[in-house]
Length: 218
Image (cartoon, rainbow, N blue to C red; front, top):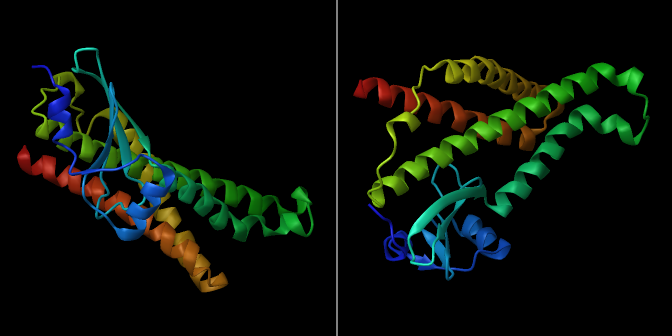
C-alpha cells in the first residue's frame, strides 16, 4: 500500500514553519498539537509529548515525483538539542570548576574521572530517552497511516542487545540518582539534580512501561 502526500498531511493539525523560534514557542507554550511544514517533495512533522516536552523528534517525510512516500527520517528538535548540551555543561560544573582557578589535572584527577563518568552516563541515558520517545511516536505514525511493518523489525524486549543495554543503563541510572542526591546534600545544586532526576526518571518509567505492556500482551 502506497502512502501519499495527502495521507501524511492528515497527521498535521496546524501548519507552522520548521524554525528555532517555532520550536522554542512550542516548548514555552506546551503546545501538544501535531504541527508541520509542507514543501513540494518534503513534509516535516513534529508533536510535543506530555512526558517529554523538550526532546521530541522532528520527522521528515520524503516524497517521490508522484507524491508517494519513499523515506522517513528523524532528528531531535533544535531547542531540545541546545538545552541538552547546556544542561550537560551545567551539570559538569561541580566537577570541573577548578579549571578556572588552578589548571592542574594531576591534583584533580579524581574529580575529572568522576565528572567524565557522570557526563558519559548522562549522555547515554539522554540518548535512550530520545530513542524511546522516537519509537513511541513512530509507532503512532505507522498506526495512523495504516503502514505495514516488517516482522523482522519488531525487536524483542529481552533480546541480547536490549539486555546488554539495560545491564549498562540501569546501574548507571542508579549512579545518576545517587549523584543527584549528593549534589543536593553537599552543594545544594538543585537545578542539576532535579534536571537529572527528571531525565533518568522518564527513561526508567518509559522503559519499564514498555516491558510491562509487552509482557501483558504475551
